Figure (cartoon, rainbow, N blue to C red):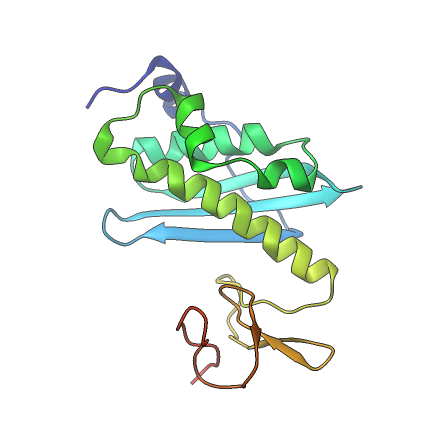
Length: 170
């Protein structure tokens, strides 16, 4: 497998690795096919990502992606950080082997999930987070939301009519 110099450097010296105690937002994603699991945690102050950390278990490309995504998002406003895309991450890393391009998707997805978690908490919505033991359907002012896609649910049920994922703990 041939990695760019930037990927090699980030493998040896990853930036922002570790955990944030009491994060404002958490995004967890994974790819069961390859076994990569990523968690990105953020602390937000004055609408900017003040601190960002990651815990990643997986291949070298996944660790490099986590490192570069956190570098790119640190200090940015929430709106600007949401614009960090899979394509931008892959370009920032240089060449990733074709069979590892999926890792760039995981990084941007985890960041966006952490931001959505932060925004929901800020608005008083409860979202299902993978680091929470209890799985609850979200509600805010009498309206129910899917914990996965955050779409309003017209009917409270065991699965979301939008994405089809389960919404209630069984």
